[in-house]
Amino acid sequence: MCIRDSTNSTIIITEDSVISFDPAFEVSWESKNLYKAIYSEFIEKDVILVVEHQAKKNNLNYRLLSVTGSEVNSKIYENKAKSTDLKFTYSEGVLFQYVNNSIVLYQLPHFQETKTLTLDQLSIKAPSSSKFSFESPAPDRLLLIIDQDFYLINTNFNIVLSTTSSTKSKAEILSTTKTASKNSRASLFGIVLR
Image 1 (cartoon, rainbow, N blue to C red):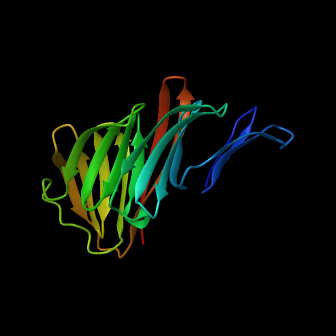
Image 2: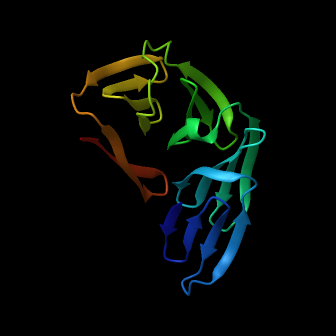
Image 3: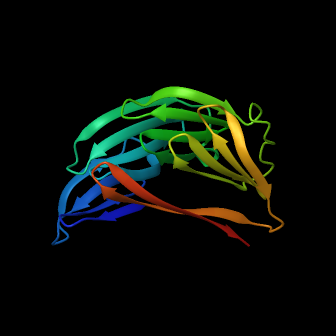
């Protein structure tokens, strides 16, 4: 679930729908999801990205909605992965999707697949467990954590810029993004070691 509160409305994204409430907490609009929402993010001041997954056919529906409830764009892709195997992150017009040891980059707003990177291409050992997370601190950078190993990747040149390991048993990425102005966003990243 993703929640955003602005001066005019509160928008809540659930597995089933995107709902906007006015300041009196009355429903101002609702957009039903085609499938189950598995990822959502406010990507601009007035645009919401929602990724939905259909379990029966393993279809993915990518949607962009305005904060007024109108659909900006959508695209359905067939995908062989279970929703639990999919991970997403977003940075400045690029949606990164991780599935089956590959990272697929989609250029928004048209969800054009621009590149696919495999962990093998990057000489990174595939995760042996579910201890995998990633974030994009910039449109051409990815920070991956696999088990106790950290990788900073340049997606333009398909190279690992830096790598390090931790002796701690668990690591996770914490991040927050705030729209600073109409054309800029401020991001803060941290890594927690336990």
